[in-house]
Figure 1 (cartoon, each protein chain N blue to C red):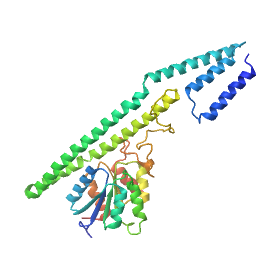
Figure 2: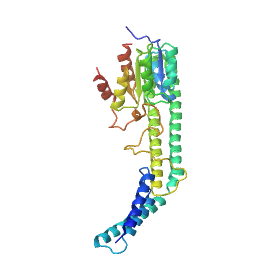
Figure 3: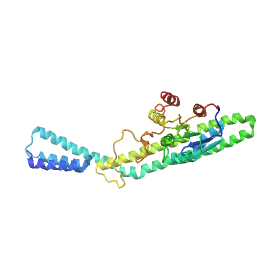
Figure 4: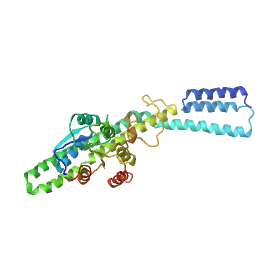
Amino acid sequence: MSVDLNMNVLIVDDYKTMLRIIRNLLKQLGFQNIEEASDGSQALKMLKSGKYGLVISDWNMEPMTGLQLLREVRNDENLKKLPFIMVTAESKSENVIAAKEAGVSNYIVKPFNAETLKGKLVSVLGEF
Amino acid sequence: MASRAVDKDLDQRLEALAQDSDGRVRIADIKEVVHALMDTLRGDVTATELRAYRELEGLVHYIEQARQDIASLRPDEIQSDYIPKATDELDAIVSATEQATNDILDAAEQIETMAEEHPEMGDRLMEVTTRIYEASNFQDITGQRVNKVVNMLKHIEQKVGDLARTFGLELEEAAEPQGEAAEAPATAPDDERPDADLLNGPQQEGTAKNQAEIDALLASFD
């Protein structure tokens, strides 16, 4: 089954420039509906009030970090199966392990390229 | 030889220091105690006591010299002037690179529109814009690295204040002492986020895990 490119994708980052870059790369891959949040708490509100097929989140944000958001998502009965990709500059093993234990679907370290992003999307969502 | 009464007085001073100092003793207090200890050695002294006396005298001189050296560094200027200016300069770098990156992204988005208008060049133009988007990642990393430096400067500021206080120098805006840290933190000292201890920011090349290593680590969970 191919990926529904019309699904709502939520990208979460406190750097507007980074949101713009990820949005543009996703558009190039064919995704049509991309929404943005600037931290975990705003993202959580959006996730609870809308229908999303994927979250791509930074880690280091205030007041709610990406890891906190991930834990909230996994603890929510309606959201717990939502694909969640962390895109972050945090590249220590302890970070990757903490994210994996919290239930991250995949992990991209910044700076990344379009091929890496596409590869992770395929591994999480399937071919498209 | 020193009398027991003087020894008792010295004991009381040390006891008072231990109770009032909360684990941190001011150099000025140490100096005072050393002087008091030297006083106990007056009168008939043995060769050993004389050596001890000279050592203590040297220690007093060393403490006074260190205090003067630190005062001449003008720690108040480091706190009030140099560090705030350095952080302002770093903030300006982030602002300028962010503005430049957004200008570059504006141009790339225009090229993307041109790709739609000129399908014969579409793939090539899309490739070019993808490269631009990928390269623009640097802005995020630059911002995070600069924030790490700002936090390190704040840490240095705090340590300078601690050092100045230890040597009895007055700093009007000195920060409260904090515990020792083996490594300057990447986050502000007052960061209360529950995973603040995991926030290290970008690592140096060679230290950082690359994508392949992260993939291998993730795969080890399967």
